[in-house]
Length: 104
Image 1 (cartoon, rainbow, N blue to C red):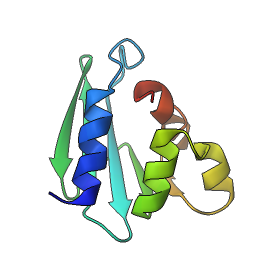
Image 2: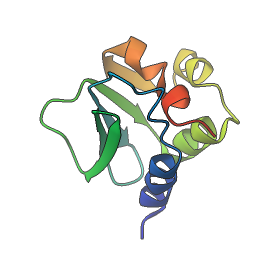
Image 3: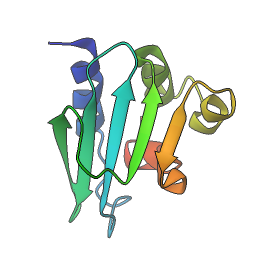
């Protein structure tokens, strides 16, 4: 199992359906140094897919270490974005809700 899959599996386990209520979104994660994944959120559930999605709502590009730090709470996502560690394309406001939807 790849390191990145482990991180996404952990995110799925922490998925907060209440926070994602009424949300329909596809988060594409393009990892510079690992496999890419996307998370599809709809109807209070979250499904993980491998590779690139055809039509993501927001695409987040970073390296695996940055993803781990943001999802563990070590690094603030907005700070990482401002420092250039995360590049976002699409609905950037949606990206700010990531740690609410997947609390640690």
